[in-house]
Image (tube, rainbow, N blue to C red; front, side, top):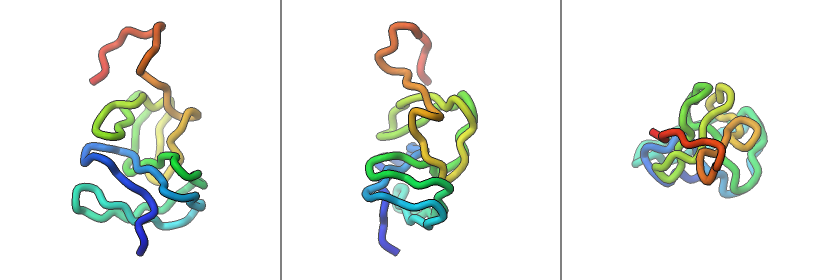
Length: 100
């Protein structure tokens, strides 16, 4: 099966699509030498992210081994991860919280 998404760091809980992907498509991703098959529950545009594991509301979204945001709702495996379900924690003047 052709790999259609990339994972940059073993601690990431999202993968990035390297082409447009379709709802119900099975995608093979490599996470630190371990292959995962993820069935997509949304269409995923090129360059966008999808969840590799369940991400609970309020949990950190991790890409490149770094926290890139926080889930504003629970996110299912294979779900599109974007501005509709995460909020940025970077460059915000309204929030001084400690990112963990």
